[in-house]
Image (tube, rainbow, N blue to C red; front, side):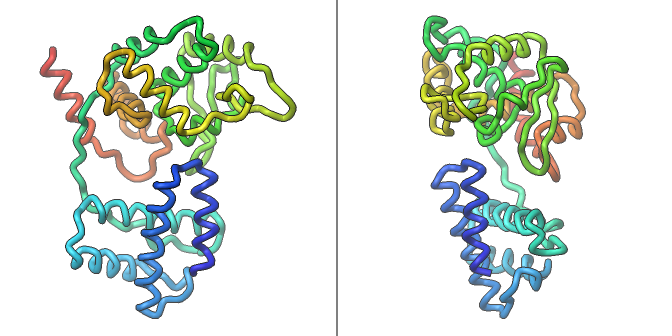
Amino acid sequence: MENRIESFADQLREENLSPNTINSYLGDIKDFLSFLKAKGVMLCPQVEKRHLDAFTEELTSRGMKKSTLYRKSTTVKKFFHFLMVRELIDDNPSQTLERPRVERKISHCLLRKDIDAMVAAIDPNHSAALRDRLIIEILYATGIKVSELIQLEIGDFDSNRGHLVIQGPPSPRTLGLEEDLIGLLEDYIGTLKIQGDASGLFVNQRGDKISRQSIWKVVKKYAHKADLSQEINPHSFRNAHVVGEILKGVPLREIMSNLGIQGSLDTAYYQQCLKREENKG
């Protein structure tokens, strides 16, 4: 099974995950495979649900925190999803694997007024002003992950239908956009100087697709200029999107579908923001 680790690592790199995240995933998988080897399980198709349960029990006996157990369980599920997609196994033993519930706390609830403040902080004369505004607006309006944002191609935007196709797991999904955002995208694409075969939607000065680190810098830059919490990061927009959709009365099933989430949505996590807003009212 060790020969699958490098292929899994390649998949993680294709998702443009940070080196630290990739190393964390690989460390967890190596720990898992070592456990299986000690149990005499040498091939991926031999792994059964009972092996996963035994691994969880082993981790629990080590006195690991729930947050660590959650992370390792998530890694195992991601690994078997990868094996299924590559058709290296016929059945996914992790499909019903339960992860420990971990209470997550929101240190700052990003609201629409915060988005407006960040947009207002953008210097309109800056060469990347329109690009930076779209990064902020799209992250909030769609709730997509940074890894999905930086992979967007110009062709993923259909101006006639007002749709944006997200090429993320588990499969491509189509999201409708508000009229104002459609107009901004049309204006922005009109300013792009497409060179050769380059077709990335969000690019740097060289015309290459923008990096995760650059997205992080954009978010931090305008959060700081807008005097918002320094703990805001690109994932804060995904949380804010969910809260906004819940407030609008959008069904949870629809929210999950739009975000590409399989399984369940941790509503207790977002309920903290909702309660804060009620208390402000």
